[in-house]
Amino acid sequence: MSNRFRWVVVPAIIVGASVIWFVSRAADAQTLRLALLAVTGGLLGWIAWRLAGDPRRQPHGERELEDELRASEARWRSVIHSAVDGIVVIDAQGRIEAFNPAAERLFGYPEDDVIGRNVNILMPSPYHEEHDTYIARHLATGTQRIIGTGREVTGRRRDGSTFPLHLSVGKTTAGGEQKFTGILHDLSQRVEMEQQLREQTSLARLGEMAAVIAHEVKNPLAGVRGAIQVIGTRLPKDGKDAAIVTEIVKRIDGLNGLMQDLLLFARPPKPKSAVVDLATMMAATADLLAGDPALKEVQVTIDGAAPHILADAELLKIVFVNLLVNAAHAMQGRGTIRVSLTPVADSWCQIDVADQGPGIPEEALGKIFVPFFTTKARGSGLGLSTARRIIEAHRGKITIACPPAGGTIVTVRLPGEGATQ
Image: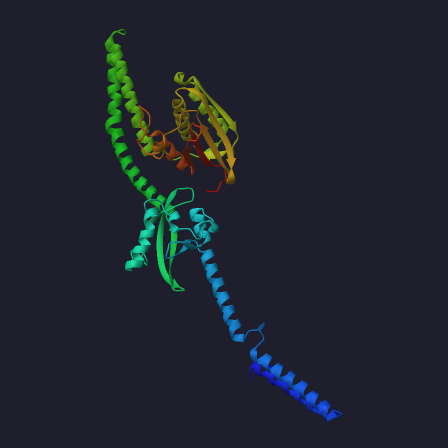
């Protein structure tokens, strides 16, 4: 017996029994007719109401179906929201309909800012302008160039920066309209690792070449320098030939310095770690700069404090002497270089070296750590490259920025004692 039938029959039996009892107690025929009419009308109304169904109640099967649908939707939302990769759903016009939290982290847009907008806001040129054409061509021809296969593409963040992505696209139909679901995986870390691997391979080859140069060039060069100096001692000191000899020795010294830079860059020594007080080390490094007569109009100020670190002080001096000399040259040998020491999270420390120079041109800033690239008239182009290798050997990082107000700020981060990577 169904629930609906039970709720009709049981009341009918109760009402029927009540009628029989009432008839047996009725005083006259008129009262009996009125009673029968009232009870019959009430019974028929009750039956009609129950058969029609209470609008406030639903059949048990329909409630279960709705509950299952809600549970299924909740499960899929949970999967999409917890996904590590970005998930973006668009319609046939390219408008964004869904944008999960991972996509928010990838592109820097909150979901509310992109819903309803064209998905090409997530692409740099020329893909930004061409994307609508891709969709239109697919809808017109059915040709699938990326759907179901995936490819490496370039994404564009909210701040305008770009980064590599792997994009997989799926297609479905909902309500008679085609939808496209894109799954986006950030390849930045993989591309960076590949770049580091290529650099390490190149450096290994460069190290082999540097060893040959050291053996075949550096030692004979020292012999040539000694011979030129001997010749110089036999020439009149006030003659033109003596000046030429002096210039030759300077050029040989410059070439010898290049050999040393090349060897240091190609095969930097492993750091011999010891406890280093950064403030004391930076003060000693600034004193070395003050001893150069050509830089006597340069002042170095050191502010702040930082925790002690485990590092090779001699190697770090090479780095910071290079940074201070670069800053002094950028200011044409006069001005103030500000060095700031700051403790940062997880026991790390930060050293900022800021100059008052004109800054670095934007086109050169991206190449500043490339070996043999230099903006100086005379320079090996290995100073900053070597500095980065030494800092990375200490598990640190070095970056360069040019603020809009002018000047250049070189930031070095180094781990303190007990710091986490």
